[in-house]
Amino acid sequence: MARPDGVVIVSERFWAFAGLDGTVRTGDMPAPHELLQRIPLLRGLVRLGASLSPLFRRSGVARARERYLLLLAVLAPLALVLAPEWSRTPAGIVLTIGLLGWMLRGRTLNLHGAEHRAIGAAEARSLATTWSGETRPSRFAPRCGTNFAALAAPLTFFAERLWPFAPALYTPLAVTLVALSLTMELWLAIQDSSRSLARGLLLPGLGLQRLTTREPRLDETRVALTALASVLERELA
Image 1 (cartoon, rainbow, N blue to C red):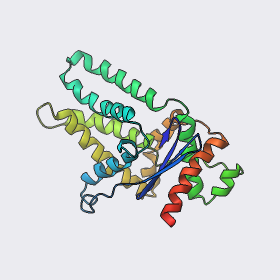
Image 2 (image 1 turned 90 degrees about the vertical axis):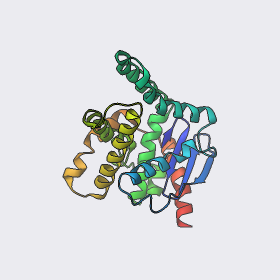
Image 3 (image 1 turned 30 degrees about the vertical axis):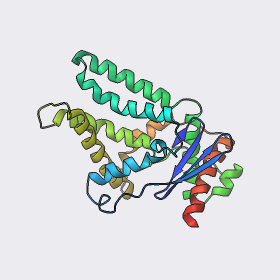
Image 4 (image 1 turned 120 degrees about the horizontal axis):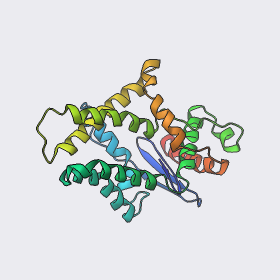
């Protein structure tokens, strides 16, 4: 998870944030009940919610104002159901552009590439040579949230049009939750598959990463590697 001032690296049990100013903060990830992690569709929402824990928890990496802004960004599209029909699409576009601009502010794009490079270095067992700059793993990653968003967008589009129930105030929320659940199930299936056809579904997201990442400098890569090393140290302790 790249941020304007640093990088968050998350495992199933721990998270660590390394800042551009040299600070490192750590925390534990929530441990959902094992039953919730086995129920299809629901397990995807549980996993997605857990992945955002470092942002929304009081002891996480986001300040209070930022947490409120994130919550507002999540709830705002649901409020559009109360707006006049002619205004919903323009308002949705404005909200989306504003949220993207806020998310990708500062040095986020470079640190996003650094985050991918650090994870690639861990997978390739080249942490030391990546730290020194001798090797430079790809700044593109198959498990990036950009890939998830590229899968979620069309699924949400079709879910809205194929929704079988009469429109109600809860419909936007229900459609969103169903679309996210289906996307996570597809996402997990793709990650567990070695077939080229399944991996091909990630190509749109990998293409978008050319816009959501930039080539990181060595010092930015080291920030991501610092966060990664902190998580690995706790995992292997």
